[in-house]
Each structure stands twice: as structure tokens, then as C-alpha cells.
Image (cartoon, rainbow, N blue to C red; front, side, top):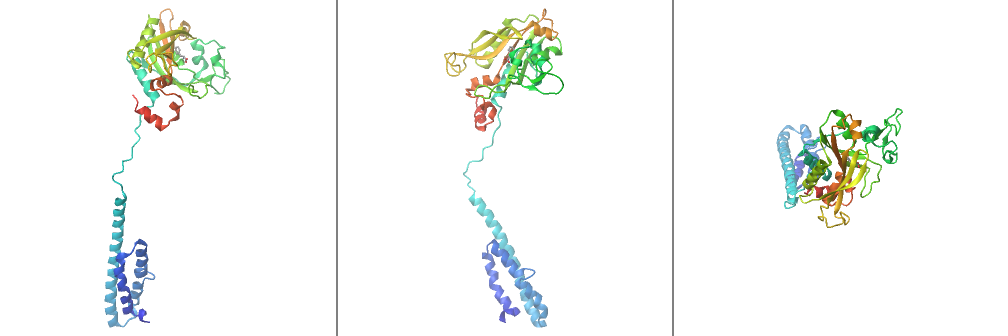
Length: 355
Ligand code: PHE
């Protein structure tokens, strides 16, 4: 057969050399195997068969075959390089250089964190230091030392999360352990640490068996304040809290005190501030009253001072407690407290850009 002769095989392969420059990636690989493949490549087979040729023919055909092999090798490399650089060019061409860049999320403080820090800063300016306490408390710290009577309804299982810590402690015996229902036990811890004077602000999280609805959450933040020294009076309480309100809200903010009751303060009051949003004329945020209730306060009950080993004849003080979430909602016009818990990036991003 003509094709089986070495010379005619070489002649048959030559035109395929020129075609290499047109092959796509798949065809190029197939052609490399067909021509130079170690097992069944046509040129490989021819080179192997040289030994069977008569000497003169072997030299001539051998030289031609080797030359053709080198030419194929070079052509394969050149085509493969060209395909790689074509692909790179194509990717660049596909890029839309006018497309806007991807925007990164820039973190921001949570509105409640911001409000807590701001409030603590204002009191820091008046000489109050930050203090913190544990979220799991004994019944004594959370209620008893704060002068709650043993049968106070706040201690009910329905209002408070009791923890099962083993042993024989039972709700109502003072030793039971619970998730604190307010930050006031940290007043007790502060006063038990050493003698007065005390000026502390206590940010923290508290727990109550409340439903999770637009205005309640079972876990929420509080900021407690305590000042105890010789000669502290209700005038100091009012002056301090008025200063706070004017720093935090605005210089024209008005405050009013309404009588109230807490077992651990006497007298006790609720403090309202003139509505930040309508300036006191009445709007939906203040339910048309022009006032917003922001904290509970009072003079520390002498019984509480005594429970902590503080001489109630010599020392007096005031305490207050507020809910920074409610305050953040009022300040930013947030209609539903649950927005502060959900971690929705659209909400947080909007808050991050607020004042
Ligand atoms: N602990 C009270 C509450 O949670 C708030 C408060 C604190 C009132 C300090 C008076 C003094 O409602």
C-alpha cells in the first residue's frame, strides 16, 4: 500500500502541519496524540519503523521525519500558546469597565450601643464611673436586698426566669438563682464592695417574661445610676437628671417628675422629658401628650443602705434606671422594638447613617 511507505506517510502528514495553526483546543489535543502520541502517533510509528529500512533510504527518510517531528512540536507549542493568550484577551474584552464597583458593607455601631455609650459618657462627665454585674443573680440581690417584700408579685414564676442550679434553693427563699429582672442588684454589689461615696452608671441586659411584641422584649437593656454621699438630696437628683436630659436630647428639653413607687427608693418618681420629636406640642411618638416617660428614680431607701452596711444616718443618695432601647426608639423614630433585635442589614445600615 502506498500509504504504508515511509515517504508517502511523510507526504500525507505535511499538509496537516499547516492546519495546526487553525485548531481549537480540543482538536489540537487530538492532533497531538494522532501525530506524536507515544503509543499510536503516525509520526512516532514511522520513526520507529526506520530501523527496518535499507541504510540509504533510512538516512534520507530519517532526516526528513525528524525535521517534520520538530516542525510539528513547534507548531503544537505555538498553537497552544496562541490559544491561551486568545482566552485571556477574550476575558478582558468581556469585562465591563464602566460597571460600578462592588460596595463593601461598612460596619456601624448598633443604635442601642450608641445610645448606651452616649448616656454613660454624659454621666462620666459628672463623675460617674461605669460598673457592671452578673446577669444571673440570687433572689436576695435582685429582690431582697432591694427591699422587695417576700410576696412581691415581681418574684412570681410567671414574671421571672428562675434557673435550676441544683441544690435545695427554692423561689422565694432568697437563695434561688434567676436572670436579673433589672440592673438594680448592681447597686447592692457596688455598695457592698466598700464605703461611700459611690457614683456609678451600670449598663446591662435584663430579663422578664414579657411577650416579644412591638413594645416589649423578654431581654432588654437598662442603665442604672447610683450616687451616694454625705448630704445628697432630691435637688441633686433633679439637677443631675435635668443636666442629662439637656445633654442627651436638646438644650431646651423640659423635664417633669411624677410620684411613683419602687420598694428600693423613697420617695420615688418617674421622669418625663418634653417630646424630642414634636417639641412638646403632641405627636404620635408621645401619643399626643407632649411628654415621654424615660426613667424611674428616687432617693435610695434607708433600708437598702443598711442592707449593704452603709450608715443611713450619715449617707443619703439617689438612684435611677432607664431603658436605652425605648430611648433609642424615641430618638430615631423606630416604631417596633423588634427591629433592634433582628439584625436586618437594611435597618442597621440606615441607623448607621443616622446622627
Ligand atoms: N429598677 C427599676 C425598674 O427596673 C428602675 C429604677 C432604678 C427605679 C433605680 C428607681 C431607681 O423598673
